[in-house]
Length: 469
Ligand code: BES
Ligand code: MN
Ligand code: MN
Image (spheres, rainbow, N blue to C red):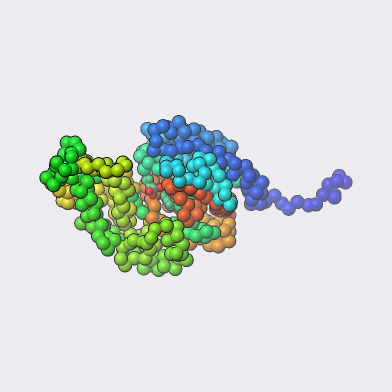
């Protein structure tokens, strides 16, 4: 009794401060767990990593259980989906679906990494590893925000279902069937995704668009097998030269894609969006530094950011042909192959682009070779509805965490499942990115500032706090 009198009076238990205290107290462990996650080489594209992908899935399911979610590893014809659920919110509370991917891109070229791709290393407060930004670091920060509420404050104001897929980097071939098969279980009021970047250091972003993607191989076959280029050159059409003609015919000097009909479904963007893009604090000099190229490209009549976000484009991703070893070999190769992708904007569709490309290649390829187009994968472009309680909660939480309100930005990359979520689940999708600009996604020395990981946890935790209140 005497002791109780001398004890200072504690304020009434405050769940918000309990969440924050939990994050402060556990941050060191959160970081170490992220390092563990990044050490698993879950490269979805490579058959030899299939057991690693699976190991990442079961590791993630265990961390979901630690966080207070029910978790299961759900089989698909490819790599599994990890599903986490917490349904303890008060009756009538909304449900949020969190999506992310635990697979990563191959780490090659290995020699260009300053520290090994799967040995997370901190330099100057930045964490380097494959998947640090895309998307393990960003997926994991969501789990930690959920954990802070569930373990720190004993619950969440909304129900939550987490979908972590292991095939995003190979085009999500099994995810649409998965979402359709589980549409009841995945029913939700909003989808939240962190798999994109911040516009500038310290400046959080909410996305208003993503470009779509249509990815192809073009195969050109000439003679039955390689020929002596002296004996046959000049009389037999060279597939390398034929491929060069085909590839050169894809773009005009003005930066426009030259395939007839390609722009038919492209919509002009409203002036207010274009105006808001123009107002963003864009550092063009920094961009040039970031890419390290002698100069820049682009479609006439559009600013650099518009070229990246609201205009479609065409890129050669790789070419395979003839002799590329040491020294000179005089050869007329039998075949050539090129990987070509198009980034799409509303309302272009990968299926239509495929038809147009097939017609175009048939028209421009010399008739003395056979040329064929193979579609690898595609994804539709997406444009957001930036209204509603979830959007407002995200805006407030980001402002509170970063001390500055988020900017609305577009994105040149693609997350194909976004449009499918919106259509199948009939729920708005919110994209808030925590990767730094120039995160080296898909490239050597991928990184995330540890600060972004931590602020991301705080911002997402704040998002749920906002929804509760
Ligand atoms: N997270 C990226 C997409 C992205 C990158 C969004 C940068 C925002 C900023 C995603 O993992 C990705 O790489 N998508 C692929 C498409 C997929 C079908 C392989 C892409 O955009 O090339
Ligand atoms: Mn990603
Ligand atoms: Mn990626």
